[in-house]
Amino acid sequence: MADTSALTYAVAPRKAASHCAVGFPAQVPGLGNLESYIAAVNRMPMLSVDEERALARDWQERGDRDAAGKLVMSHLRVVVSVARHYLGYGLPHADLIQEGNVGLMKAVRRFDPSQGVRLVSYALHWIKAEIHEYILRNWRLVKVATTKAQRKLFFNLRSMKQGMEGFRDAEIDAVARELDVKRSDVIEMEQRMSGADIALQPAGDEGGEGFGPIAYLSDRSDEPDAVLEARGRERMQQQGLKRALALLDARSRRIVEQRWLAVNDDGSGGKTLHELAAEYGVSAERIRQIEAQAMKKMRSNLAEYA
Image 1: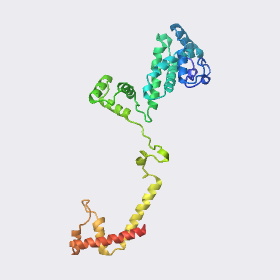
Image 2: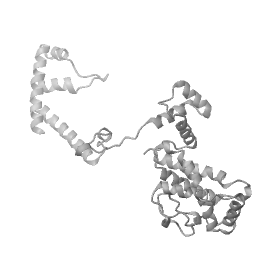
Image 3: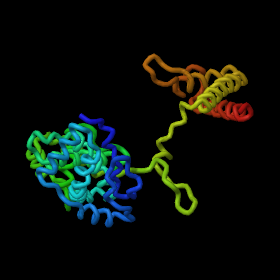
Image 4: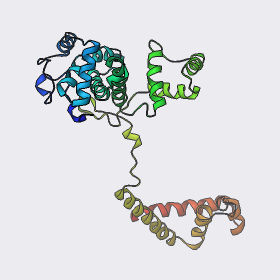
């Protein structure tokens, strides 16, 4: 088998012929647009069965670059035809053709004329495979399909959903039966396909800042400056609370501690006003007044401490 690097041709419909690698037959003149490229490749002569086999043997046995180049050039029209069926994915036609050309070159590299199969039949798989991979890479920022089964389901659903807003339950069951997949797989893939990409930080209009998920998804709690700030605030609160409590008289301090800082064995809060009133032999209203005065004094002291 010949060196495979010989088949790394620059078969790019958007490029001029001057970009072609050494050994590539310069049969496509410099082209300024996609329409000119398509017209040029459609004018290229097709090969007979005998010509195709002879060129394939020359490439396979002797590594003849010119022979490989003629095989590629004579089948560029096939790539154009295949790429046209994938225009509904919203990707540039030229890019689809270019990726299909890569698949065609891979097919020529592996083509065995002794199998009795025409190159066009053999190359279709490689052309479609490269176009499929390109679509899956570029259709969305996040890959919509990763496994082989998901890829097959993606392209089948795309063709079935043309002109339809969404599948109803009966249609989901019918698709699952036809494609021999689980109902849940159909639902999941349809959801992936119907979802849209959202920029985390969209550009603002007229110089303003746009609102996006970054506004509510960002979390600074683990950033070093935020951690230090939180620790300092907690330390200040603890020290300030101790200082404010120390300035109260014994009765006021105990009432505040029993009302707000104490925890019972069952996890509930501290004592009620009536429980403290019975303990001190005064009314519940008097306990509330003492508590209010103590809290007011503590708030004032905490404000000065902060």
